[in-house]
Length: 201
Image (cartoon, rainbow, N blue to C red; front, side, top):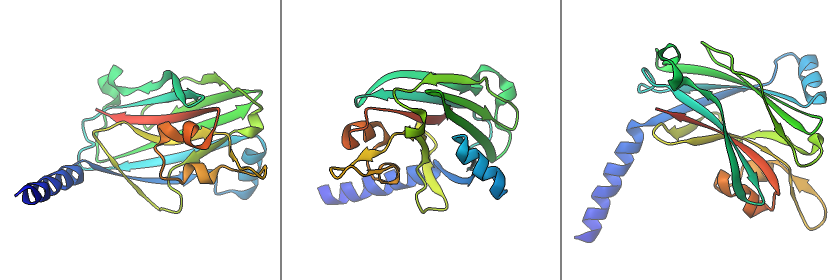
């Protein structure tokens, strides 16, 4: 009997998740090779995220930056809050958001461009040299992601590499792991990093 109930519960849970699935695709950087080379040289990252769901229409979204130090969340900053005005309410089943990040002079600079807004530019201190940090998304080799529309989801990480015993380092190993984004610092011994999250409501 208990296995039957568990089976029914799993069906209901899967159906509920499928009803709230948000498809995410991305476009990274510039199609112009020379411009992309310049962006790489200047530690500037540009990535466009495309969100799609039947349940998007009529919602707002909030984009936060979470700062982690020694594996602990130390600060949460709001980069954009669409619920401040009905003007920012999503009016279709698709939404495009562009993210701009620059790492220089031991500072992280952020800017977000939506279809109806441009956010304020925000600045955050880095704990080490700017060149040690890199922006990573969570696509890996996937062309699209499926995320839960009802939850807050991490969409980017600004990290330093995990360092191996032989002295080599890796960024992709961190971002493409199955470790929860909030546990990256603890698991990979990364002393300082940021997460960019989005929540629809």
